[in-house]
Length: 236
Image (cartoon, rainbow, N blue to C red):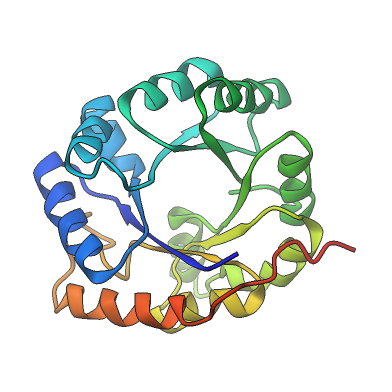
């Protein structure tokens, strides 16, 4: 598949999310993500506002669903989301419920392997349960906590090739990637490139980062889109 650039709107107000999204779309971003902070702060209203402003742009609702899967996915579909996120560490029945809602409401389901003891096995399980995408995710607290103890900060690139090789669905790498690393994700077979903290959002305050963000985003989008077709699902 052709690579896709997604911006994570990890902001806490609708106005900031909309202004950032306007800039991102001008720069060439393909998907908008209603990040977890935005959903916590604004709920369905944040997704509705994005859908009104961008009627034809895919919108990912990063719910990080752990329970009540059908209802949460249904609500976000009705608000205008096209994709929802369920956690691999949820019960299998919750994942199945989100997948069922996906079928019923024409939603794509993204399964997130955050904090799984075996991230490769979790990715394969998400695919087997019907998820359309796998998010290979090293969490914010995990990264910062390990680094604070003087140890090497983990990266989703550490196991990205193994995750890609284990599944046939497209993979997205998330968690503390530098601009250079994000641009290289398609080289690992991961065609969905997500940009968020700390690339475009201040990782400490969850507000817009300083600098010429639009120019940086345009550069990233141009480089990522230049890869052309990315072979996915190099399953053994």
